[in-house]
Image (cartoon, rainbow over all chains, first blue to last red; front, side):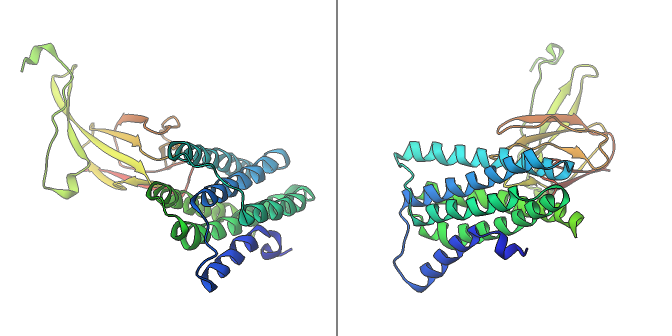
Length: 175
Length: 116
């Protein structure tokens, strides 16, 4: 199965970016941006939890552990900032679509085992991080009004890029 | 200043030498009464800053985690390794030889210490 089919959540981001580019005003409010940020991080934690249960590959397990811990730290930062700003993350079409697509990906991952699972998980992580980096750069940061929320999103980018680099290192073992 | 008291002391060096910007001070060594240079490497935005430093044998390097996620500092061949450092935590060690190092939690993060 190709990555593009696997990572259906990328479609939710991609379609929104296209919409944002095509129209001037499908904009997200800051509470909606906060919701998308939390949901995107939680989705990767959920994938990592599946990997922790199904994989026996030490590199994959270590990567998954890092994803779980780092994305939880980002959520913690986002929630603390939202609290400070008096912002309640608000569900929206993007966050709902992300969750719906992630459910499909989780089912696919849960249907695999052994090396097939490890490869699928890491391929998904590479694609997911590429897509999220693109979405944060091209959609979430530009759509954010509050300076502190914008800075948090900018600060998270290097972590996402490091995760992508790490995932690509692990992925080389499955070529 | 009362030297015999052996009070741990750091002298902040304000230097115009940008290459030496990681060198923040000297700390006295109570065993020898000599001063040992203390270098600082910050971990921020998923990078070691500066990523390459030059020190003398026996000088100290302090790593401070300014990032939002935890990191460690691991010698390339695992000759030495820090504990995982949470946000705001630091780790100091005495450099005896040149080393390439990385973060074992995020292996794309790399740095270098050269002993001159």
